[in-house]
Length: 296
Image (cartoon, rainbow, N blue to C red; front, top):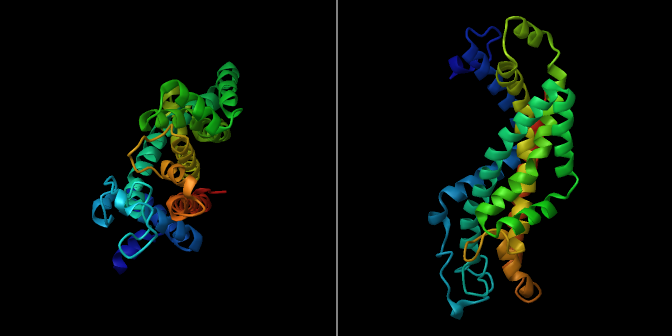
């Protein structure tokens, strides 16, 4: 164990791999020193575990209806009570973590590369390329994200796949802005000039030397943006335009329980708490990653 510690804390790394491991270890130590970031990491890890082991954690079938058990208050048998169709709310929330993670992952893996490519190309080439791409970005930023997502879903039709597409189409502009700002800082750096003098093409410079510099900032932006993605997806589900019944999606569960909010408060309260807790976890983790990854 001491040998591993010495390997990770060496002041003179013997290889590039050792240097990268040492840098990752130092970042982990910095993250571990932030209690709020660790709290956010714990919430995210619990979310991932709940999604992975949902069938083992859930106490009931999330889709099974039993009208004889409708609107039961929280008890030892039904920890979070039951909804208007007699379905166990705790089991539906646990299985709803899978729906939430699917939406988040589909959006992130699509908007990250798109925003990174548009931002780096715009910042590196400048001129008319920059003006055109940034004006398109400004058009998307001019509308509230949920309103624009509603417009796209209205065209594409309701459903979880179309909801992911709509959220992705409204989420990429901030990523492009961040990547453009990072690119404009490094495009005139000495190492970029040296690579250019060696005959590297513009495509190679953007892909191999500028994009990797922008990735840490985009990771932070992605982590902070996950809360917004979850809230937008829940908003679409609440309006009936996201995941469709009987899929256990948290926003749709809140919509189903809003008419019982005063008498059977648990129907809408527990899905709402799940959304708030997960959004808080991603925000806390994003703040911690920003402090660790931001070299400035």
